Image (cartoon, rainbow, N blue to C red; front, top):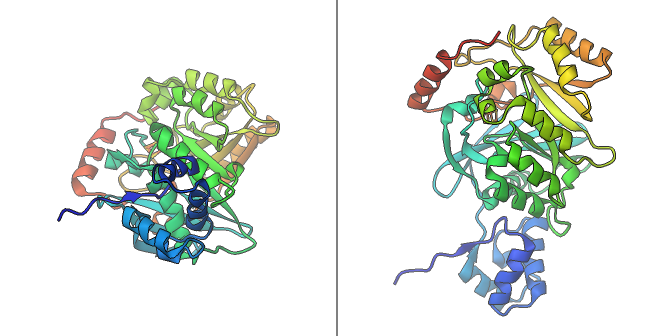
Length: 367
Ligand code: SF4
């Protein structure tokens, strides 16, 4: 006899769960109980939801499942960062990173398998785009990592979530937003949206959608260039979403009273790290409540760039600070395990890598 496929509840918003339970003629509060068991208590077996009656647990187990991504590899850095390779139901894999700090723990999540954008300084680009993650697979990364830590992180540590792993989150908008609402729900993981950061390379139409969301994360924009030509060469999607229109969208972006936009700027030796770049950057961000995170490139043999030397990073930072721009140099984490920005899915298949190499070889380094 053919067995019916069970519905996976992972990542479903409470309202969706309530509608599903209503169709089964179950009381509304049952959905809230299950939601709380899954996200508040990290229970993924109905048999362990002891606040539900046994017949209901059995009935739910027959119809539904709660499947976490499977941890297939766990690599720990000397700085405490842990990189997870997670396998999804269709055997595709994504990477997520656990970054402990003194007073907070940050989880860096992926939103797509691979990425369709081709930022020249990012190794994830070598994978190409495979597919979007579902909301369940996005929330599942948090659940799998928390479960690996027995559901508890350092008790004095606040949990932050950043969407800076594999993929462009705004190209998987609906799933990312549903995952954010589930993570933020007070009956579940209860992660404040203020502690979530979504980093985009700039999908302009989606910025206005994001600005209208009731539950929305902090926004970070990956800039890394100060002229159209430079950005076209470094981040080719700039031909579609130009620097000028991106900054205009940032000016229109609604910020709450003390909120600022974060701009990420990867410093590349001799490419975008001159004092002229710093001057242009100050001008470009004029009128935007902004802070800038400067990032050192994580060098790799496959990439045609080198990291800016520390003295140039310092000069760049000093110039911005002298113009009263709020600027930070972000410390790379997990370098020894290839868990730093732009290094996820470092071990790519040879064909993909060859393809990537031929594409970047054909790009002249921008002036
Ligand atoms: S930097 Fe982000 S948007 Fe650009 S290729 Fe890498 S994952 Fe995609």
